[in-house]
Image (tube, rainbow, N blue to C red; front, top):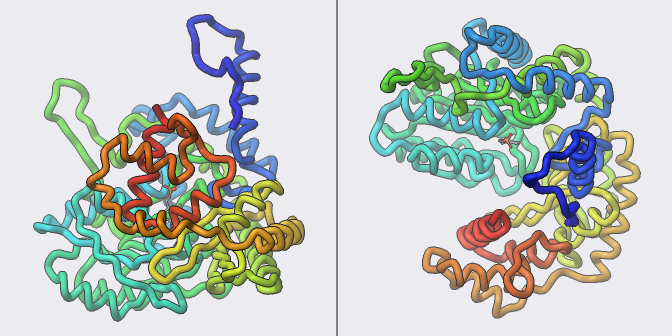
Amino acid sequence: MTLPEHAAPGPTPLPASSVLAELEALRASDLPTHGGRTLAYVYDSGVAEADELGRQALAMYGSTNGLDPTAFPSLLRMETDLVAFARRVLHGSDQVVGSATSGGTESILLAVKTARDAAAVERPVMVVPTTIHAAFHKAAHYFGVERVTVPVDPTTYRADPEAMAAELDRYAGRVVLVAASAPSYAHGVIDPIEEIAALARERGLRFHVDACIGGWVLPWAPGAPAWDFAVEGVTSISADLHKYAYAPKGVSLLLHATPELRRDQFFASADWPGYTMLNSTVQSTKSGGPLAAAWAVVRYFGADGYARLVDTALVGTAAVVAGVEQIDHLSVVVAPDSTLVAIAADDTCDVFTISDLMLEQGWFVQPQMGFEGSPATLHVSLSAATAASVPDFLVALVGAVTAAVERGPIQVDEGLRAAAEAIDPATLDDAAFAGLLQVAGLAGEGGAVEAPAQMAPVNALLDVAPPRLREALLVAFLDHLTR
Ligand SMILES: *Cc1c(COP(=O)(O)O)cnc(C)c1O
């Protein structure tokens, strides 16, 4: 990572043109957001006009404030328009209400907070499958909700309704929320929503479907099982606009089946001498830019546009799956229900090495660590813009696998592995973490922390570390990186 030297605000004013040039130079070290070769983090329709429209709307509304919908009625209008569109495509009744949030995590935080506040029980619990997005872990942590994670079916990677039912009964009286994914991020499969909805309904519980990544794909995917408000018992849904609606970053929708279910999402405070604070979301002052950009892009594509984009992305996904199955040493972990693919390697090579080698060829595929019976994998989120270059992707992948097999799987030192299993991160101080970061390859000589050029050895070591240590090491890494 090389950044231009003078790219830090200083005392001397600069002409706008030089500042823009610096921004351009800074961006050069980032992953590309467009071009279809970054297969996580970003989503690319491949439609330049839509991107330009989104950017213009973002700029036009960048200084507006969603704090007060009566002061900026245009923002309220755009929010209700987007909710109305989503309600139609997600088979909601006219009772469905929703809010625009800053992203999937905020939608999920609010779904959990709302459920917790509405139930008002002591020691609240949420029951979720192990494959639920980590945003639920964050919500549980932030809001003091105990998280009961239920193992998924080991062959289909889908939530196991029977096992979930057992936990619902074990924690009867304390459960405030049940959640499942459509689809899950790690494996790209849809949980059995109808069965879980029935369990929740029988027990009078809220059931959130996390469609952050599938919410703008599945409505146009032929043959998808019922998963949305068409299923009785689904009480809320999160759907990110900054993923497959192809809007610029910073916007998601949280929908509730009825206004009553949403009520506890809101927050008001009149207990101070300023304006009465009245918020529908976590943020108070919030830019109208991402909302306006999403509104513009959704209006531009319309349902027909999304139908075409989804078709393109699904054809591309099928081509990736078929191609991977032809590559020696690789396999698709489970046939995907949407546009996400998890790819595993056999024991002749390492997915982490493959990921590094792909990056050298200009393709970003996201490494995922092994977890409870799910192997370490490469994650691919396939955008419409990638579909046309799937053949190139597969050629690069064959090359990367061949080279990775030559290098062989990464051998994590046995002593290091044993040490990783024995360490209790809770007992480590800052100096101990600094030492560990060096051992893990996340800090150089003298303790300078930076993102390593070769991630594979680091990932391989993290992969054998227990999750608690993995978390602690990465937090220490971030802490040092941002000093
Ligand atoms: C992306 C994603 C989230 C989190 O959304 P952010 O926008 O990254 O905060 C939650 N759930 C699923 C299934 C996702 O794919």
